Length: 221
Image (cartoon, rainbow, N blue to C red; front, top):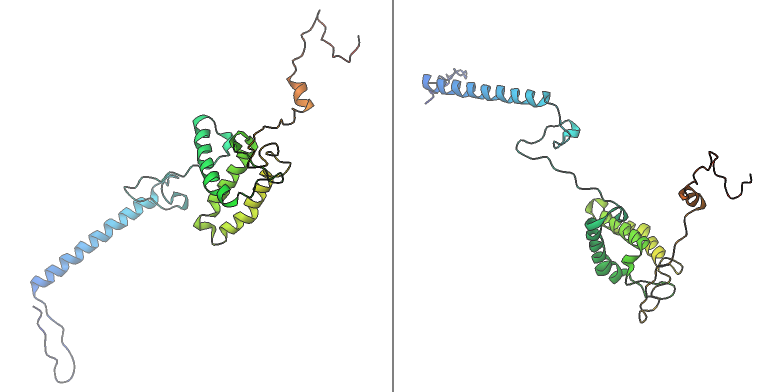
């Protein structure tokens, strides 16, 4: 135990004397703390000199990752549905159909008329699929909390109104389909043919005859 010296009458204090056993314990604790500090400094130097991998968390900011944690894979980037093929396309179309049938049409499906046609087989219309898929991707983005409180308002103003007006226009892609719920109909309208330049490029040239190049229909000998 430390020995406390009573201060003299003049108010001055004398140093406190500790037993040698306590001094040795304090000295050992100080040495241990200094060793730990030196080891931490060596670890920091090693991390600072190691090359940063882009796969490491915070690697892009020049910060090391956390030991024992696997690098987080970036989420797949959304792709236009018409660029997908096979099973990948079918899975995406199923998910889109669930959203259209369970949410979009149920909430925003106005009355079917000649001015606003619809089609129960809209999945057969490639352009309609592309429009609704883009609308669905925008919905997912703008309902995210990072979009802020006005996110869904922006989606209504800039995406929903424009997409539905294009898909259900009187002269739009569904104009030959159902215009009355009592008379369901489905018809694919033919699109424009290829341009003349594309058609001409697809016609193979006639082989040379007798060493002379073949002439076009408008060329005369």
